[in-house]
Amino acid sequence: MGRPRIPATTSAEATLDALADPVLVRGPDGKVLYVNAAAATLLSEAAEALVGREASALVPERLRQIDGRPFFEWLAERYRTTGRPVRVPLLRHDGVEIHQIVRVSTTTIAPDRVAVVAVLRPPTEDVDLASDPLQLSQGEHPTPESSYQKVFDAVPVGVLHFDAKGRVTDCNEVFLEQLGSTRERILGLDMLTLPNKGVAAAVREATEGREGYFEGEYTSVTGGRSRFYRALFSPIMREGRVEGGVGVVDDVTDRREIEARLARGERMASLGRLAAGVVHEINNPLAYVRTSLELARREITRFQENGDHAHLERVLETVAHAEDGVERVRIIASDLKTFSRGDEGSWLLVDIARVAQSAINLAHNEIRHRAELSVDIEPALPRVLGSETRFVQVLVNLLVNAAHAIEEKGEGRGRIALRMGREGGEVFIEVEDTGAGIPEGPVERIFEPFWTSKPKGVGTGLGLSICHGIVTSAGGDIRVVRSRPGEGTLIRVELPAAGGGAVPFEPDVRDTDPDAPAGAGRILIVDDEVKLAQTLALALGDGFDVVVAGSGREALDVLADDRDWDLVLCDLMMPDVSGMDVYDAIVEQMPQLLPKLVFMTGGAFTSRARQFLKRYRPRRLQKPFALDEVERLLRD
Image (tube, rainbow, N blue to C red; front, side, top):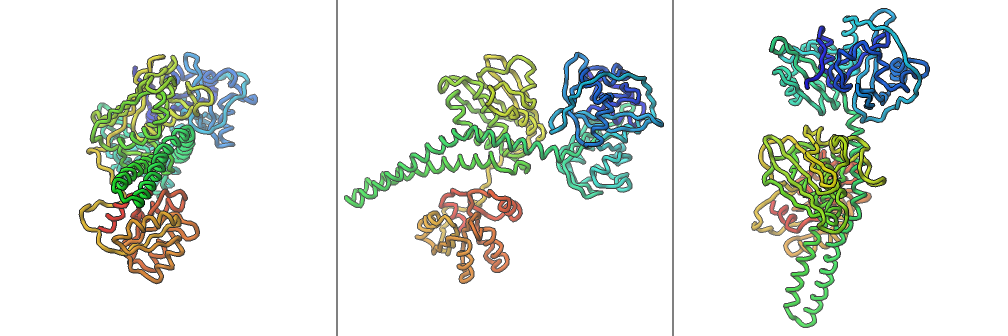
């Protein structure tokens, strides 16, 4: 069924009807003066049937008067004095209450005649709650067409008009405030040539007769302000051709920050719930690392006693086991770092297959006691654009939810299937389980905030809502394909492919010919973990002249006397004088050593360290690292 529409008799009315957000106008007499198509769709009623109705009839009876004033008048005054949007229950045609976040403004459409303009959004923000019940208000209904331009100016979102060539022809004051610009600078701006390719592409879609959408960071070329915006560009058609278009722009910077905080909170809550399983996954390999090292020590002692080389063979075997255990711990630590780090706002080309492996590692202990996991990942999947941290969060949430839907009766009792592949220009992810299924009712509700079918005290009720936000912000879609009580659920995620095949992961250290001789050289190792530095020095001592400095301050003393080094391996995070301080000293006093400096790091856990790595992008080794990585550095 098509969207309800009302005739666009003016440019302003066409603009309002093109808005993605529902807009409702209450006239001076208390009746509905105008609703756009989005509002009519939200209220499940034709726009023509809504216009002329008492506006108070759109809210429950308990709210029709508050403090002795008609609801919408009270709402306008509340918003004017506090600046805070209000969460309001609206009545659909069938009597169902739907909650919306309402922002309002007023506009004078004739002397002493004031209309209230309300813009509606889904409830995703921290807002005031309208709750004071009183009585109903009555009145008459005028519909002056001249009010539409004033409504256009009063809408609390940015609105602009552009011609068929993408040049701005008009805009409201809110749009100018959003960009920090002026009307003189904006009018005539050719948006098809903007440096921001995303905005230019969205406008081009509208000039070609299609809706264009942009969400992301934009720096105004006329005002210089850099913020995050959401914009919808719609064509205005006349007799089958594009006459121009209208853009609706919302500054979503604050909303993105709130969503990011919610996502971080949910991710940390998930990490807490996974902690026991992760500790188990770390303790297992640590147990056989320790056992292997103890056995190696015993075998070496026996070799010293009797000279039997069979003991040395067993040493090699046990050391190999220890290396395997250390590698398992390294992978778990890497996955935890990906899951918990705070750079989820950074969008990069992401290897979605690697995301899947990280999520499986983190959710493994939740799954193994409830179900068998089958994994089918199409080889050479294209990358997707987004945040690796957030994508891991989505997949961990889906896998853990699938596991929790299966009753814990013993390993292998249920089944979970993870499938990933490519269809057309999209990468799809499917998670299917044989669990309890979603309770009867609209399955789409599982993506609403605080909706959950889990027992009280299990989960936050935000997981799938946040997953929905992460996926849609990346231009994708997440939906329930099917779910039957007692039979299980299939959820599918679709993400736009970024193009091209999967690119192999590029480590921080460049690859070189492994057979090239390392040659002799001088190495300075700087680390406050002295045992690590000494072990590394012992390992490299056969072919290199190695000096150990146990602190950043000691390293500066060494470098002050001796600057002839082939490689300086420096820990990033050290007390007193850090690796960053050593870097600054080298830049200032001995810049010739800068190409020889490589950082060793187990993680940048301070704001300064994260900023440093982001700004300077130095070469670095991620702890724990293998000896051959150091040898490759020397070959470079």
